[in-house]
Length: 371
Image (spheres, rainbow, N blue to C red):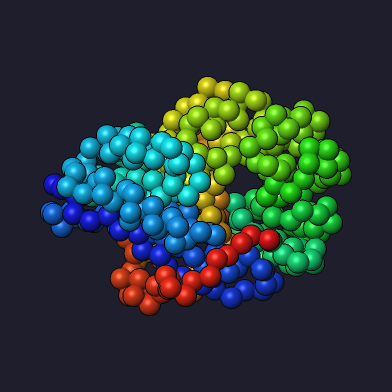
């Protein structure tokens, strides 16, 4: 079997309108699928991280990675991934290029499972748990009342853990009042503060019994500063969704910067890197909770990873839905938990009709920036 095509497919499937409204909704409506086709008719599907620089990531897939893989045997997965990593040594060890590598790597895993007729979790060591508890990862909202409303809706939908994306104490207080003490709350602040500001605000947050405080310090790679925050607070500290490769996570652990590490399968380099990071975190007795705010192969790959890795306490899920399902067989949550499917590969092939209806206009596209 030989690879005949590697192609990035940028999409723009909007998030289904919901209340309360969020300025972040527009960024969620960007997706990148990766298609790897073969001369034997098998096709693998992967997903890259898409928010912000969608077309730039697509160019890395199409221009830098596709020529490396053309004509190669897709079942030589480790060798092909090593080739991609080495080829991008100067400019691709994290960020946009590693997001591109991640999407291609996931498509290769999908192909490997399909070629053998088994789900990807079986290739990763077999199923450790039938399903994994899910937490609702909310958007960022304009006012505490909106946060309370969104939190209450997620709890009513069956979630027993909810992550906020606010930067004010008042919103956390409103969420806690809305859901009570029986629902776990996490807070992801997306790197807004200095070390001193993070400690000062963190102390005000301690009364709300947060499961973790995520990325409180700017810049995200200031692991020494994050370690200082961790030492000063009783709230567990989480980080890692913006890092890449096992070496990035070794730096986090060496600095004593985290109680929870959060590799993202679409940023970190793919499933091979996720497994390496899981072993590293286990050896350091640090909890691993994958970042996974996705709707397609990226989420499916995260569920296969969680299914085959002991000790994963949660997976992250977006609480809403896209206007049209990204997968022909949508990934479903039942009773506050989600599970990898048993179909060969990742089980996340897209609906061809959806691909045709929601292409991302490469010429007229405008960038999206988190605010």
